[in-house]
Image 1 (cartoon, one colour):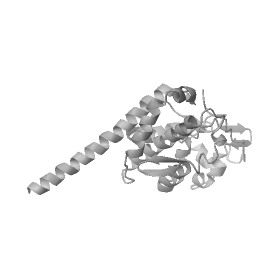
Image 2: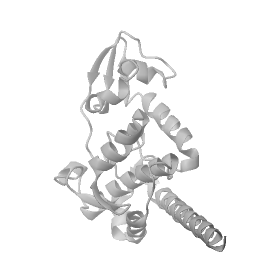
Image 3: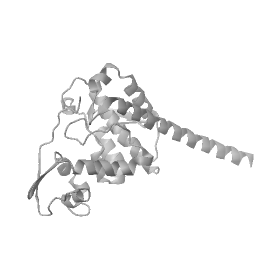
Image 4: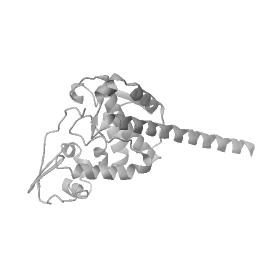
Amino acid sequence: MKQILTSIVFIISLSLGYSQTLETFFSKNDEFLKANVSEGKVAYNKIHKNPDQLNQLTEMMAKLSVSKSDALNYQAFYINAYNLSVIKGIVDNYPIKSPLDKPGFFDKTTYKIAGESITLNDVENLKLRGNFGDARIHFVLVCGAIGCPPLIAQAYMPERLEAQLQKQAKIALNNPEFIKVKKKKVELSEIFKWYKEDFVKNGDELDYINQFRTEKVPENAKISYYPYNWQLNGK
């Protein structure tokens, strides 16, 4: 009986430690973003001059462990990890005018995340798209460019994740600079071309977009894609 009780206490203490460590990561990331992000623009120059807070976060991110079965914590962790890693990649190569100025920025450079060395593309495609298939992920992963939906000045939190995903999807899909409607024509971000399969599971792209739009795009509108703006989203 004593051995059973000891095992239960050990498991509970591990669980509490995991929860508190992850909670600390979310909280510290929230502080970092509030201090360095404004209106979707990132203060890369400021962070480059004093990277201590960023480095502490990425060190913490490297050591954490998150189970896929704990879906909300897992998704929130990897969304934050992606966005932080983008900032880290830009700061490490600063000054640059675009993330594409660094060859392999998305598919060759690796970051230590939850004990793995992993690229940004793998975080997006394997950890998030591959496991959950939620197209709203494209409105919260921010690639360091103006063409992306804007980075918000707060961390994605497990207890608010559903509301945050929904809010960012609505903001992006009602933004006339992101979805450009001209009578019977609509120009979409190339995100919709690159990841088309994510948006057409229950109809076409317009069916997906109109779920979130206040003013619906005409169902027979002709779709085209405008060039992605890879200019840095810096202040």
